[in-house]
Length: 324
Ligand SMILES: NC(=O)c1ccc[n+]([C@@H]2O[C@H](COP(=O)([O-])OP(=O)(O)OC[C@H]3O[C@@H](n4cnc5c(N)ncnc54)[C@H](O)[C@@H]3O)[C@@H](O)[C@H]2O)c1
Image (cartoon, rainbow, N blue to C red; front, side, top):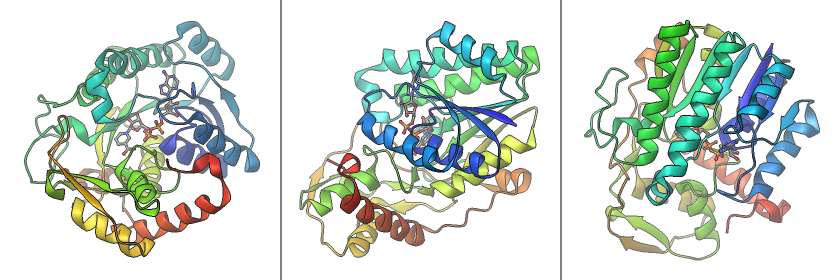
């Protein structure tokens, strides 16, 4: 099968591409290697893949309709995993228009080409942020999601709605996957675990917002990839799935786990709660368990220890990957 992975040089995309290539699928990656974080990290992700496999890479912007059409014409993908996006809640507050362009218009460009080129299955990388500040009980796919509290969350919900409209009007098969705080090797450097590991090893203070009482369902990246592959192979008409673990972890407990794994005590800087940040996320994963046979394997303890092993190895090996 030929799978088009947008955002395939990024954190989750490079793991998805790696798994697809390992099982023998043909993969084409679109990624404009933007500077949201150091593009050297994204190039290194591609090099890592290229060392073991052969794939096509297109350094194009998903907003460039002509380039996208050329790629679809050339590659004729059977399936699309659409992960390219402006990620991150907080930066979306300072540049909401860019987030809307890339995450909403970019998704529309790809859906339209998926329709024209009769793609068999379209996966959309959505986010737990669509649930907003919904409270502290597990989130289900049929919960109301009309109150996103950041532009990023609003763009992800808008992407899901566009997906539904393409399914309804054109019969496109679509799955929207709501990822819950993904971590693991190659994690985006702006995200808490990678950022904290960098600060702790440099002896710098961690910004601890809202007394560290926020809670997240942290999901190890290989579990997310299991869910993505299951949805890609299953071909539902239209479904939304939570991909998380079903367990939430307090920020303070996460910091302790990192301190123990790194064997360094962290300095902390107490800061007020940040706009756009939700206080709590936790996935109800019963739908994914039943329909995708999704069984997350990696506990937070195991995931942090694997992450730290990778992080320390990389700090020694490659300056391009160092978290500044
Ligand atoms: N990491 C998480 O915890 C998480 C949680 C929920 C949802 N998501 C979603 O999963 C997807 C992947 O996230 P990630 O953490 O791997 O982020 P990432 O930033 O590492 O990957 C996204 C990739 O998309 C590329 N990209 C961005 N804009 C583009 C454009 N206009 N044209 C072409 N390429 C473009 C970037 O260069 C980057 O390599 C995103 O859609 C994100 O919103 C991630």
